[in-house]
Structure formats: C-alpha cells, structure tokens
Figure (cartoon, rainbow, N blue to C red):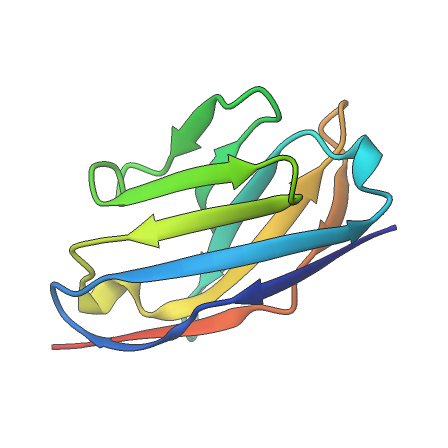
Length: 117
C-alpha cells in the first residue's frame, strides 16, 4: 500500500498561483508515475498532469503552459506549480501513484483549490 498526503490548496484570485505538494509513504519502492487529477462539483474526475520516475511529464491541454509538475524522488514527493489560475481551475485536486505496469497504487485524500474571479 502507498499512502499519499496532499497539501497546499487554498483560495486565490484569478491570475494567482498556488503550489500543491504530495508526499508518498509506505511501499514507495513500487511507485513509477505520480500525478494529479481534479474533480469539480458535479463533474467527473479528470487528469491534470503526471510525471514518471525518470522525469517525463504529461499535461492536460487545459493546463499546458500554466501548470508545471515536478518530483523529488529522494523525498518521494510530487509538486504541482499552478500559475495563471482561472475560476474554471476550481476543484478538489487529488494526487495519484501508479506502479511499473500502470496499476493505480493509491489516491490522496484531496485538497481544495478555489479560484475567485
């Protein structure tokens, strides 16, 4: 089992920035990719970004150029730097961890991000 704990959410005005963190613990040796998803009220959870153990990163089109995912393998922590935030970025953001075969190893509890207009 892998435990994931997010932090860094909050309330910010449109155009502002936030940095989310997610620390992994437990059986982290099996973790390959870590990522971020989000879920807005009344909507399905959607992919935001992911980064592999080797540092390859992928983004949803809606956040490209505004969000940056990074990772500190020594600290088993993944970050999401969010710049140029928009009201439509408002959601609960969840951290995820996947194994070497793409299997989902765990989810974080979520952290609320609210962007006011």
